[in-house]
Length: 150
Image (cartoon, rainbow, N blue to C red; front, side, top):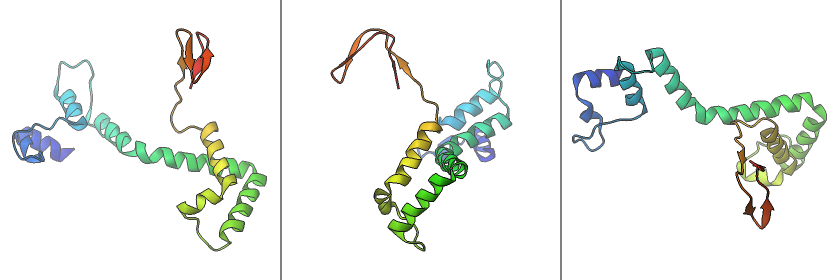
């Protein structure tokens, strides 16, 4: 962020462009910095706000996967009988000393079901439902007005 501010202050933004010409970069960070520098803006940002926004933007893609695994482990700890059955499935398919590879997942239906159930119980992102405003036909099924769809 500091480097981008220096470049902006020197008026040398075109040095950062991939084309090397007069292309003006206007990415998410630039928009936030413009808002920070605009004293008349209704939204007042600080450098800390911008750092937090950028951190959230970078973490968002990896955080959701980690949360699902964390919830799955929490649920398995709370349900030891399901954990035992999953371990037995993995041991019977993989053996006790072999690591699971992505290609092995198709042979682990119980473990797949655990993760699907975890996603159902603890979705990593909010699920926004839709409400129909009028009667409609979806996949040969007639739905009534005010029907909620996910």
